Length: 454
Image (cartoon, rainbow, N blue to C red; front, side):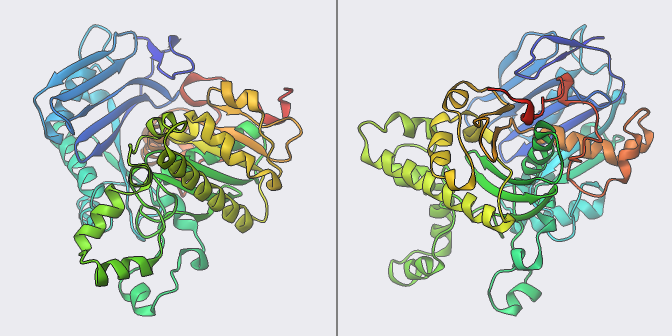
């Protein structure tokens, strides 16, 4: 069997047969996304998902050497979605999976691991119970992840499962960085503290930036800008600060989330405007951000299209950029300077105008944007001028690949080949000294930024 590289920058490249296969699952409240990898060579064999947030339910399936499948379905449960995906993976003469026995493990994205889980873990009944208990802190995400885990257990009862946590990368925050200045009872008895999120993305970008620049020991500011958004400060591969906190609501302005607001404002609304906790929750999480300020959409592309003639759209973009710039500046101050700024996720990877506006205000950090490179780049790319004192990188985030690597690490003792020693690695940080010698998905290794000539 031949596997085709499905990476957007290298579609159609034929890869050799791979023996050890790992399935990565990302279950949402109304969706189930997956990626199937050949673990030894980090080859993406198939990907897709099932989404029932709108009716009818829609399936998208992309397999190596096969036409993309798009189909309307009637299912609305994670268990049914997992069963259908497993069937599709085994379908056809060039099936990505010959039988369920070919799977070495399944890795799951879990948003909140609390204080207990600071790296990926094998899923046990105890781990499942902990994920359920943490649902109070991530009500939109942890219950869905648990549903996904249960669904896979039903169709693959004998395959080991691994949980990779979005909070784990930020577990290295110092006590000063993770502590809120609130009464001790809140922090010591109730566990109120800053956790941080999007850690799987920040972790991947940390390792990839080190590869692109060609040296370790970097001071990185990573801007994960999507419908949800966060910024992290990373020194020597270790996260030292991040913009999200106890929940994913803190920090930057997002698609429908407000980001940080004055707590006194919330007290005022409770006391004087008749709002209750449920109404505040709904307004801050679903009615604010780009949608709330623009009155147009939570989709930045639609807001940008209205800039020429809509003052609310202009204000929304101005606030969005202002808060990104302010947060990047704060992170750079925490690091004592910056070696590279990384843009990633949907907005970070694709929104030329946002990158331009942000970088225009960060010249004092030694960042000098190459306007032509910014307008034409395809991730992964360096879009800074040769003379720029700090690099500006655009990196296509690969949370699925990070989960696969963590899963491989935990089951690595039974995987033959060059990755056998990875089981000893202690955390989600992808080694920035290039100890993982293969580039993702069969790509050539990214050229060091220092060799860039124009």
